[in-house]
Figure 1 (cartoon, rainbow, N blue to C red):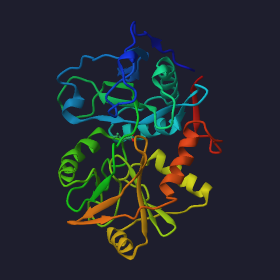
Figure 2: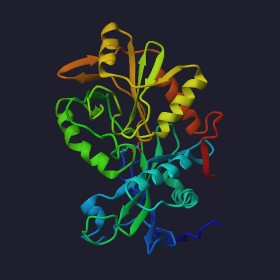
Figure 3: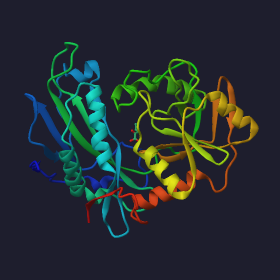
Figure 4: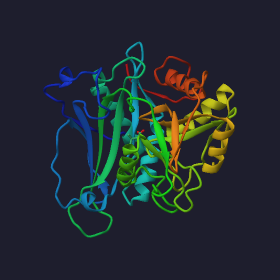
Amino acid sequence: MEQHINITTASVSSIDTVDFDHLAFGSTFTDHMFVCDFKDGTWETPQIVPYAPMQISPAASVLHYGQAVFEGMKAFKDNNGGVWLFRPEQNAKRINKSAERLAIPTFPEELFLDGLKKLISLDKEWVKGGVGKSLYVRPFVFASEAGVQAAAASEYRFMIICAPVTSYYGGDVRVKIADHYSRAAQGGTGYAKAAGNYGGQFYPTQLAKAEGYQQIIWTDAATHEHIEEAGTMNLFFRIGDTLITAPTSDSILDGVTRKSILDLAAHLGIKTEVRALKVSELIEAEKSGTLLEIFGSGTAVVIQPIIGFGYKGTDYDLPLSENSYAEKLKNALVDIQYNNAEDPFGWRFKVCD
Ligand code: COI
């Protein structure tokens, strides 16, 4: 049965104060937000309310123990004004997988999708048309119970907020391959979109930025020999004509864009291999000239070419490749997302006209 959502609309919109051509990623938010509290073992009546700061107890468990998970997705406007999400049912499932790992109660998938639909429909003027423009949608759950005992909370808040965005990275992206710090270990929370997985990366990423890299390529925590992911992106490597990505695991996020790229590549006749890739193999491929491309994939970045990488003090530059797989795949993906092409996979999800 569809659950009723209480809606209170904003009396004034802030949309006219926004410069949609100059947006810092994820720092401007729409007029409304979705809120649903979990108390006494159940999710209460959900609400859509004007976007505003909210009160939280200084003892809220999330502030002390980091019990929080999130999702990232995008809404796109097509040439006829229709608004679409991309595979949101995947995010509905994944937030619950993440929640389970953090001992957070799961959220009903149907309500997740309905909440998205109602919230984005209400703020549809914030979804701007044109490839590259979209509405970044951020569902998240956190432990709201007041109390500092170190145990899973009994009260939570699920929310969805939305931010109009353009690109995630402003310029070229170079990465550093990790040989000391780790993002995730076997048996840990690396596969979950847990807030702490991101917070833990900020310090090593700051150090890498000071050396001229935008991101870190994380390697396995035990040996630092195998390539995992880049924290905000999964990774693809083109060696010769083959596109390689690491298999998902305990320590790698099961990216929606990643799995879509694997399907699109097969559809476009690009050979893929999902297998472990050693840093040593990557360096050898670079030296022999067979490493042609590296790119990251993710909701925020879509497909982000990487122009070079650093490893143990040596920098490696990638050739500028014409007819890159990154470009082919990005075009195919974006065409589906913006309703500019057939969607043979059934990935588009209509939000409103
Ligand atoms: C996304 O692509 O949605 C992500 O989760 C990356 C985010 C941390 C900006």
